Length: 77
Image 1 (cartoon, rainbow, N blue to C red):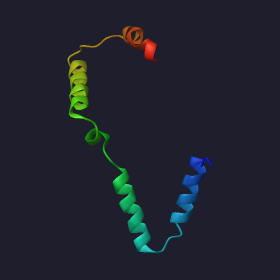
Image 2 (image 1 turned 60 degrees about the horizontal axis):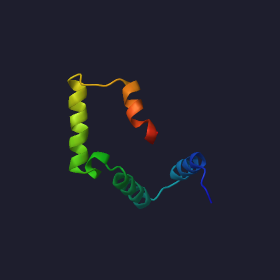
Image 3 (image 1 turned 45 degrees about the vertical axis):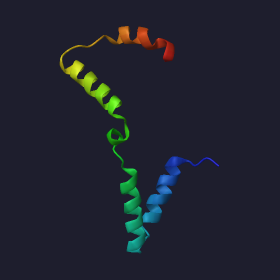
Image 4 (image 1 turned 120 degrees about the horizontal axis):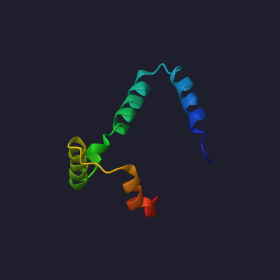
């Protein structure tokens, strides 16, 4: 059964407004905190270095036009 995400969000919001038990609220807050992982901490050192190199290239003006990148990668798009 596929969940309509927007309806589910609204249902959860409505339910949250009725909760009076602070321990339930605390559990929900803990769940939210565990779900807020920073993707940067989840990628490998090689991926981080690659991203940093790309940012450095961009900062130094070492860029290629979109049309050139599209030609290189079009077989995967």
